[in-house]
Image (tube, rainbow, N blue to C red; front, side, top):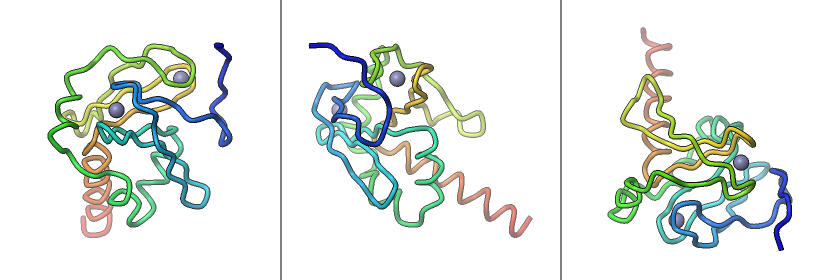
Length: 134
Ligand SMILES: [Zn+2]
Ligand SMILES: [Zn+2]
């Protein structure tokens, strides 16, 4: 049975938008991220991304890096939001065009391939250092 799923903390488990595997929920305090055990992709909210990048150790805990399977999944492009079924839009960080991720225009959810969270966090770190030393 299809029902509308709201992006709230008590939302049911979602399936990986890329490979369809049931994602595993990782909760740390108020942070809640779903990770695919098969391709290591991450599903999170836009606000959660910022908070993860600002929480020391969180990126390393969640993102297992760009493995063989992770980069393989990079070629899959036409995917839908696991929450509301809307097509995800491929995005890239203008400061880091090699990092490509998908975002839902309806609920704002983000899908990151394995290794992409790490990439984004490294830029955040560099920017922070530039602010301090520049
Ligand atoms: Zn997956
Ligand atoms: Zn959505």
